[in-house]
Structure formats: structure tokens, C-alpha cells
Image (cartoon, rainbow, N blue to C red; front, top):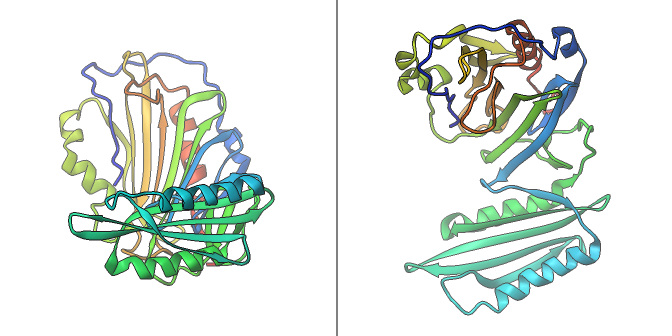
Length: 328
């Protein structure tokens, strides 16, 4: 599970005056994103930089633009590679089947390692609008291989192209350029994530992700307490707000922190809200929202280009909007 990370600092907090690039009123205009089975509103100034997912297993569904001729070449190349593999410890071709004419394909392979057989599944589907979806999973044990194969066959029937701004009106799972019709009644691995950078404020990062867990995890505040970060840097890290918070029926916790930048000339923020959801329930996954200011993208922390008021306005705009799609 993702944990809050604070930079290591030893200096006393200092304050300087900055020219801030964003005013709280700018956050009133928002756009809606569908991630997994949920919706979130983010300011129009937030630019989407990355989007990820996993479905059925912990592997990603990849959706990319591709010509039909190249799509068929990729399938043929994968089959040829697996069929020509002679090493039994590497994955070798077992079977392939076409569904819905030539628009859907499943290739099954296996490898024998340490006396046990592991299975692999590759899937391909033309979605239309010049897009195709592919998946590749390995290391499936014999005990679960058949059921996962059936899950992937069902997935191929139900995945389709989705316009970037489309909010589907049927139950299912949103991913970048795609949607899988699915009621979420069965326990299965699912996850989706969005990553934004605030326009004209490149060190303001917004991350939100959902994930179905299959064992009890520590809550946000339990992780912070057990990490010892607050005890070690008690005089440096300030909690603006900490405690339980329910968002649109989702029971969660939040920790809103302020701490010195590396150069001691200003402050930075880590504002986090998280719900653990229910174990194994795709309709109630764990959801985590994290907003960082002064995030260099590496190990360094710069002075925030947002004021305390602006950071709080940004956080409140987003956190209050997290909700399950009403069609689920």
C-alpha cells in the first residue's frame, strides 16, 4: 500500500513571500474523469499526465491505436514466437482461439519450472475507432488457470472503446480509451489510477487511485503512526487537519500536512485522503487521493507555488467529488 513520504530535513521552518500562480476561484471550473467504477472532478487547470489500470489480475489492459494489418501481424508474431520456443522452461504455445470472427483472439501457453507447470494467457481485441486492446499474463498456476481463462474470455466479450470524455451509463470499469461492462458482483482484482500536474505549477502533483485488496491493510493514520515519521520530525511537520472523514458515503481518513522545503525558504504540502473500502469488493475498493506541492519528481522538495488557502481549495474541490458512478 502506498505510504506518505516526507523529505528528510533538519532545518527550522522559514517563511518567505511568493507570487502565487493560482487563485482558489480557478478551482471552481472542473472536468469529470471516470476511473475504474468511480468518478472524480478535477480543476480544468489540472493536466492529465498518466493513466493506468489492472483488471482480473494485477496486469494492465493496454489500449493503443493500431492499424488492422499491424494488429494481425502482432498476433501472428506472438504465436510464431511461442510455437518456435524449444526450451520447456520458457512459455510455449498450447492453443489459440478466435472469438467474434477475427476481432478477438486468445493465445494460451505454458512453461514447466521446478517441476510445476505455469500458464500464460495473451488476449487481443479490435475495439474500433482505430484502437485495440491487449493483455498478457504469466505465472498462472493450474489451480486457477481455467477460471482465469474463462474470466478473460468474458472480458473480451465486454470490453469496448470509450471516448475520452464519455461517462458510461451502464455498470462497468473505465480505463483509458476503454470500458469493460461488468457488474462487479464477483471478487476480482481491479485497479485504476490518474496522475495530474497543475498547469503553470509543475511541482503540484495530484494522484488518485483505486485498488481492490484481499487482506486487511492498515489505515492511513495507522501507517503514519507506525512509520514513526511524526515522532522523528514532530517540530518540522505540521498537521493542518487529521482524522476520520466520510466522503459521499465512503468511510475514510485524511492527513493534511505542511513541512519545510529543502532550501528552508518556504513550505510544501502533502494532503491525503483514503478509504480502505471492503476486502475483495470491486464496488468498494480502497481509494487514495494525494496532492503534493513542491514535488520535484525526485527526492527534492521545492517551496510550494500555492498558498495554504489555495492548496486547501484544490484539495476540497477534488476530495468532495469522489463518488461511485450511479449506474453501478
